[in-house]
Amino acid sequence: MKETTLHRMFLNRVAEGGDAVRYLVPSEGGYVPMTYRQVGDAVREICLGLMAQGLSRGDRVAILSGTRVEWCLVDFGGILGGFVTVPVYPSNLPDQVEYLLAHSRARAVFVEDEPQYNKVAGSRARLPHLSVVVMMTGSAAGKEGTTTLSGLRTRGKEYGESNPGAMEARAEEISPGDDLTIIYTSGTTGPPKGVLTRHSNYAFIVTSALEAVRVPKGAVFLEFLPLAHSLGRLEHFLSTDAMAVSAFARNLQTVAEDLVAARPEIMVSVPRLYEKFYARVQAKVEEDGGVAKAIFRWALAVGREASRRRQHGEEVGGILGWKYAIADRLVFRKIRARMGGRLRFFISGGAPLSREIAEFLHAMGVLILEGYGLTETSTVTSVNRLDRYKFGTVGKALPGTEIRIAADGEILVGGPHLFKEYFNDPVATREAIDAGGWLHTGDIGILDDEGFLRITDRKKDIIVTSGGKNIAPQNVENLLKNDRYISQAFVYGDRKKYLTAIVTLSPEEILAWAAQKGIPERDLEALGRHPEVGKLIQERVDEVNRGLASFEQVKRFIVMGKDFTQETGELTPTLKVRRKVVVEKYGRLLDALYGKE
Image (tube, rainbow, N blue to C red; front, side, top):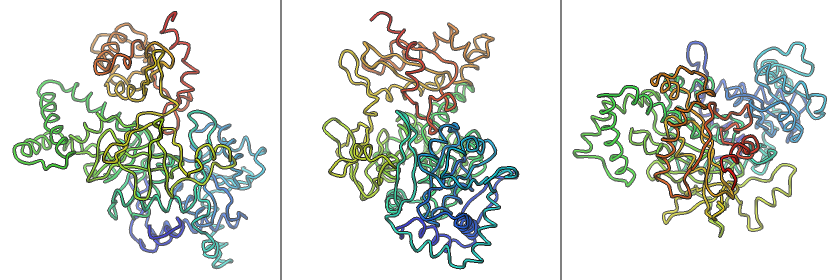
């Protein structure tokens, strides 16, 4: 960024962009383009509409919606008015929504539709600070104190005409040290904390991230991550500063189809998407069998060798280059076509990515750049680069940031991107940032000789067996999830003699396998209890165990037919497992696997 505030960055990019396309908005017939000029007009009207409602600089404006263009317009509308955006996950339950609106003392909330409005309506009387509710879609008829987004924009346009220069005057008051947003953590270990960051934090991190990973002007992103999460939010800011084109997925379930329709060049995702893609490719190969399977295995072996050379900065030429060209024509090009056929690279964050998956996709010509950060570090601290990457690591520190490893292995982070404070929680703020200005991340990691960071686990998640062995459960879980028949895995065993696990079944794979075996059962929960399925999963777990030290091996397990979900409370909105919830729900079953210790 050439600018020191997000509002100035936005205004300058709109002026530069003019009639160029900024957003691709999904519609019945495909995608409808929205230009920088149109974006600027909409954002200006939203900002003025909020000012007309009496909101003052520094007031909190919440957004309760899925990922869509209106989210981005409202966000920048709030930023131009000097307001503080409070993102709220659309998957949150009514009591969680009430907590966030009350804790942040939000003055206004934008809701996506009727179901999201209902989450607010029931608690409105208990939210004295909340004065404005805006419906992005649907009608506001009969809803007291509520307007529609189009109604707000109309009022904003009228307010601007009668108060010329009002928005510009407000914008001139905004400085780098002003509060920008309160992003609430997903609460894997307790109530969410409001991470308050400033314009200067994100101005720095956008600049640093784009210096590390160059984004060409006009490159197409496919955006589908929740904008209530810091990774989705940073993608939004990065793509704006880089003057890229953001195409929105219709929803999480349609991402595979939207990839083909939008044909993105860059995509940011959490590992779950890559895990599912890996499983689908493996399943298709097994389903095809015969000659097709043999060709794929040959091509993959060639691709892996080419990948190894590229990882070391070597050219892929000669006989290997000739073989790779054939493998690409026969196999890899077809697989990349399912991703739209134009991908330059993926970016992965939010949770650990399996090295096997990164290398598997790289063999096919798809590079995943894994990065690392926290909401408290304005999203990112380290990332692999296009010209220098190591799979199994989260790359090197971004320019201007610092990483060090404490004596107990905890990752400490320093730099201008560290958050201001936990909103209304000075005790937690002091616990997170020490007197020397270092953020204690709660993650355990290692820095190699070249400065690449490898995350080994969460400090609180490390399992210490009764024999004193320290085990990172996520490493074992990732190995289990790589299996085609296993969708999710949860490893357990703190203070126990050995490890146990919960595994969930991959629906498509297990149903196809059951049909081949003549098992008529189609209910996943019933299949999870079927003895033949138990034998199959035991074989798959044994295969994983063969590559692990004896103390890392899963000795016993429970098979569940259905995945952990957000709705049942076991997953965060970014699909990370809430370990405490899983233990509370299934701890007795897991403990029973140990018998009488």
